[in-house]
Amino acid sequence: MLLSERRAGRFSRTLAFPEAVVPGSGEASLQAGVLRVQFRKQHPTIDATYRELDDQDLQGETP
Image (cartoon, rainbow, N blue to C red):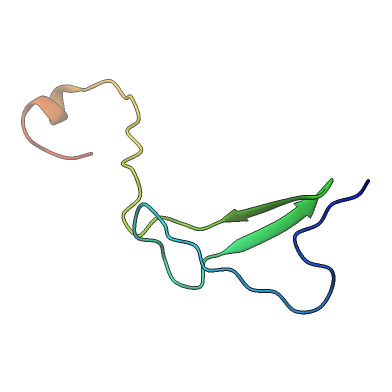
């Protein structure tokens, strides 16, 4: 038996996001019957990267 939420025709759904997103940044894909929707965060998580400090950094100068 095949089940579906809607038989046919236009469909819309409103989603509530836990964080603010960038308007218009939405991307959607459908694969194997799974709908995946992604948006960029309004304030993305900081991406910290590791680098070694040199003498200029220790003196307060930026490279």
